[in-house]
Image (cartoon, rainbow, N blue to C red; front, side, top):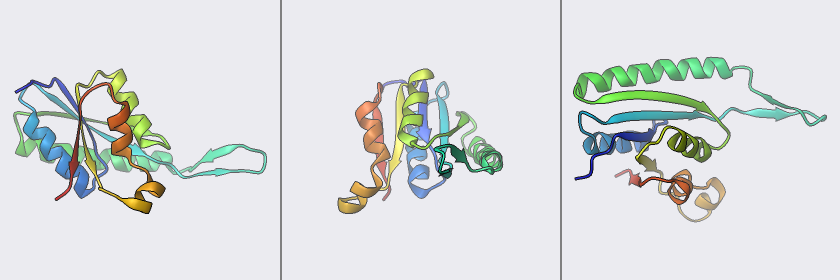
Length: 147
């Protein structure tokens, strides 16, 4: 089986992300770095003069997310002591862009991402982050559909 040096696993604390993380762990060995990426999408307002203001609670949201990811990594280290984990938090309106940017700048050689499996109108309206990542990534992408 192919050895992966760095696996990127977008992680939003959902059951889909947890399922993808389990697959990433199975594909990793004790020399593989598994990185969880959480993308915070901030609400914004546009005033009549055309200025964009991001929510003033961005720092609080990032701090809370960081604490939750620290807890998740501590739990993972207890269960999978021979694996290496870390995390990134990005702030972006487009999660797919944030995932692709990190993959390319940090040279990840695999992305393991969970998918909600939306279809029809819901997919058209909501878009598919996993599909965008699959189309544009410069490394293999494994899309995990939750059971």
